[in-house]
Structure formats: C-alpha cells, structure tokens
Length: 220
Length: 214
Image 1 (cartoon, rainbow over the protein chains, first blue to last red):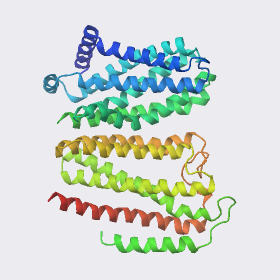
Image 2 (cartoon, rainbow over the protein chains, first blue to last red):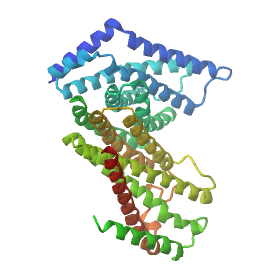
Image 3 (cartoon, rainbow over the protein chains, first blue to last red):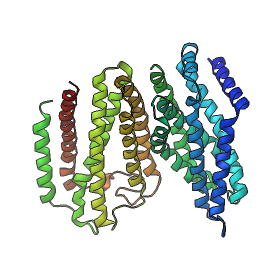
Image 4 (cartoon, chains in turn red, yellow):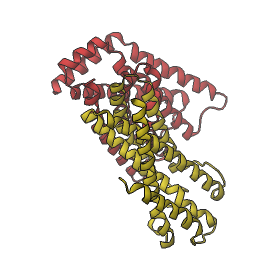
C-alpha cells in the first residue's frame, strides 16, 4: 500500500515539475496579491500585528483553495477511470492528502517569506511560526481535499468549492489566526496549549472522516 | 409515534402559559427578559437534535443506498435550519434589550451563524446536482463532514474564549448554577416540547416530499 501511495505521489510531483504551471501560477497569485496589499498600505505602512496576521492567513486560504481544487480537476476522466482499477480509494486519497500537504507547505512558507519581505518583519518567534505553518497546511489540506473531491463530482464546480469550503475551514482558520497572534507577541506554551491540542484533535477527526467518506464518493 | 402530537401540544401549551405567568428570579439588567430562555435555548437544542438525525440518516444512506434515508436527511436538515434561524432571531431580540445591540462579535454568535452557512452550502450543493442517486451520495458525504465541523464551531471554540453569552467562563451553554428550580420547571418541558414540534413538522414535510415524488 505504501509503495502504491508513493508511486502516485511520485507521478504527481513529476507532472508538477515538468509542467509547473500550477505551482508558479499560485506563486504569482500570492506575489501579486501581496504587492497589492503592500501598495494599498503604502504611505504609512503596515505596523498592526493583527492586520498582518489576518491578511496573511486569508491570503493563504485563497491560495490553498485555488491549488487544492486543482488536485482532482487536473486529472482527465480517463485517468481517473484507470486509477479506479489500479488503486484503492484509501491509497488514492492518502496520496492526494500528502501531495496537497507538501504543496501547501511550499506555498505557505513562500507566502511567509514574501510577507516578511514586503510588509514588515512582525513575527517574533520565527521557528514556532514556521512549525505553525506546517500544522496549518496539514489542517487546510485535510479539510479541503475531501471538499475538492466533492466538488469534482459537481458540474459547475469552481464556485461550489468556495461555497462549501469556506464555512468548513473557518474553525481551523480562527484557531490558526489566534495562535499566530499570540506567537507574534511572545511565545508561551501555556497560552496556546489548548488551541494546539484542539487543532490536532480536529486533524484526527478530519483525516478519519476523509478516509471513511472518500471510499463512498469514489464508488460512483 | 402517535404520542408525539398530544404530548407536544400539551408541553408547548404549558410552556407558553407557565413561561409567561410563573415567577422568575429578578436579576439586574436581565429582568423579565430571562423568559427568553424558554424560547431561545430550546431552538438550539432542537436544531442540534434534528441536524444530528440528518447526519445519521446521511450516513445510513451512504452505507445502504436507500433513497428514503436521503430524503429524511434532507428533510431533517431543512427543518433544523429553520429552528436555527429562529434561535438566532430570538437571541437577537434578547440581545437588543440586554446588551443593547442585535449583534456583537461574540464567539458563540459567530459560530452559530457560520454553522448556518454550512447548511446553506449543503442546500446549494443539493440543488446543483440533477441526478438523484449522485445527489444523495455527494450531499450525504458533505452532510456528515460538515456536521462534524459544526461540533467544534458551536461546542468547543466558544469554550476557549471569553464571551458575553450567559454561562460564559468555560461553558457556552447554560451553566448549572445559572438556573434555579423555578426556571427548570418550565425549561425542561420547553426543550422536550420544541424537539417534539420539530419531529412533528419534519414528519409532515416528509409526507409532502413523498407525495411530490409520486
């Protein structure tokens, strides 16, 4: 099973490296939006920590929705038919989850770099924030992968994924914003412990639900 | 299920007479608005109960494919959302007289509003698919998924932050010590009565849905 997961993963990464248009288009999207934000705050600059953190996570949310939604659309229906016979549903969804997770780590760390560069270096505990980014991309990919699988089955799908995705992802995003606000002032484990536990718990729930429910979706 | 209707009528009549006539503890600021407890809180109990039934039937549908389960889950979600909207409205009227505004930035309020958005998304998802079995399967998967995200939104997240909402400081619902025995005398029958009302309405609406299909 692990071999099969890795073979799908390898194929995805190979396609992405040879074509590369999705990754670079999301990067370009992030750069241009950050630049718009930078220009709109221009005369005085952005010093407020709360605004920084909120805009940061909202931008990551949009970037991840555009990138994760492609994870099923970019496959042709013939290829999905082929997958249906070769791989089981669990293998397929796990490989998609891992791929989205890796993709989102790249996107979010890039966003962090470009944000710190253009909008000011506000985060104090950087290592903690980076690990929070990893946890955040894990939660976002867990949450959005099943939603993108759902909206793949619907015809007018580009709108559906944002309608379905936003309210579901909101609890995760609220926790992430709250933790990152704390981490930008002063890092203290006591303040964020409950939130981190809750985030991990949510991830466990999301992962198990995705694994169980995807097998029903895939049977169609 | 024959006992539902008389019991529901009895309990709700009791709620609406006793709720307005019985003595309530006179607290500052709250005053007589404390009676909103009998209407506002049962709405949320009913909503959660109906949505739980809805996601249960969704799960039954994806596991055995009986179209009746899909119909039931859609129906329960529909009625549950109505109760949710009523819960928001009753809460807003209460908040106007105690907090001074209809809406404040409160984790409890935001959580319930987002929870309703999730279910509006569910209805849009249903209406955008034509094929019946496909619609049932996809929307059932989304229903189970979104109900499990509703739980942290309503029950867990508000517990982690301070809130204006009664019963705050750890508990977003009512606190055991917030209520006295006089309030409980009407509150518990009201909860059961409104849940039975929700079941009754969904039973009637299920009949309508079945007739429409024929």
